[in-house]
Image (tube, rainbow, N blue to C red; front, side):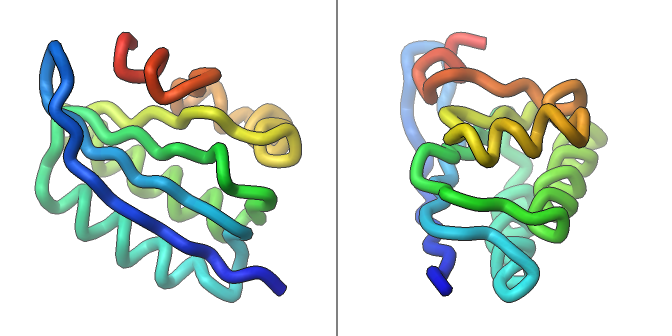
Length: 116
């Protein structure tokens, strides 16, 4: 079993700063509480834009997806935008099958996510 690793950075860009959350490993029921803590803490700072980089994530189950969808709802209520970037095929497939990609914008790269 591979653990989930997260890193968070505030990135200054040409347009406006954004929060970048990078996920690596596998996000599942064994670590969804830790993922929730990280995302809740970042959402509480009320960023205008938060991008979750999924390029290092090999697997995501429904409990982890629920955490991401919950963060998206809170960001939306606060007037912010949550975007997902660079999902690998297993994660991209889950986003498509659950129609989560219809609720949260998904971009091929972080750079494209920052461009909107």
